[in-house]
Image 1 (cartoon, helix red, strand yellow):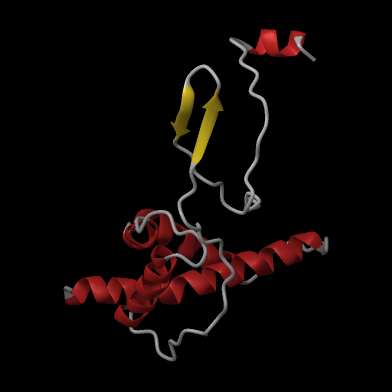
Image 2 (cartoon, rainbow, N blue to C red):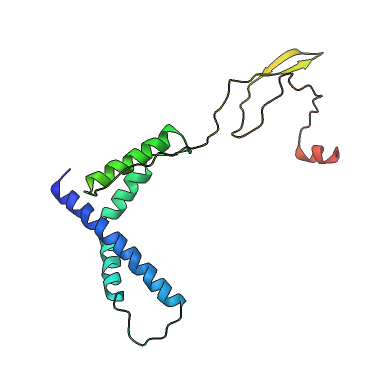
Length: 161
């Protein structure tokens, strides 16, 4: 990675926390309703940080890189890859004391493929393609037997209520 890019990232990582702190301080100042005619001492610095962040693209480049990893369902390999990418980016930016905390993440795991079929006295056995929804309850071991009611529209269904 070019030296200039690393310097820009380090600069950005120094600026962003200061900006956020300045923004928080300004918000707290406003919330408490302190009446002072002069501007707070940090307001000029916060404005410079904001202008620099909007003028330079490095923050957006980093944000794009960190969000383009794709969907990351909790506990998935994509989520683990996103965490590792963040760790690598922080190291590349020269941050120290980077470590990952071990955590336990509950997640739903799809069970064995299910099968469904319609048993018809007229058409025999008709297999169906099905898929369980995340977090759904399992079908009882004995299966489910019920009559099928065919309707051609929601209006027809409403009439049958």
